[in-house]
Length: 137
Image 1 (cartoon, helix red, strand yellow):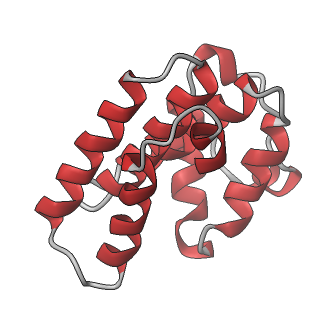
Image 2: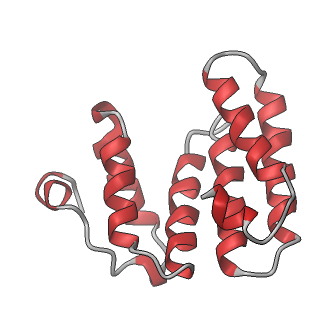
């Protein structure tokens, strides 16, 4: 996602948010630091013009915000899908990649939550076959 943002802006706040998110996963930063990084990434989103760059920065903000509230992982996923769609890419391929990279223990939970939270413009997404067969609607 970051290249979508960085194509339009040299602002490092979304990239720094991802760096802090990774550090939080390793136990190297506190939740409060992650929250501040999320706010800064969203501020970066407000300073760009294209839907692709805005969504990419918001995806980064939600990714790091997952440190204080797990539901933000859905925002990271949804904004990444929005960025791909705005860039003319394959939303189906992005969703398949996202779900494939999730740990199996949370895949069904995240899939179920995403199906409930996807905004109207993303509802036509084609769910990977395994998800269509195994996940609740």
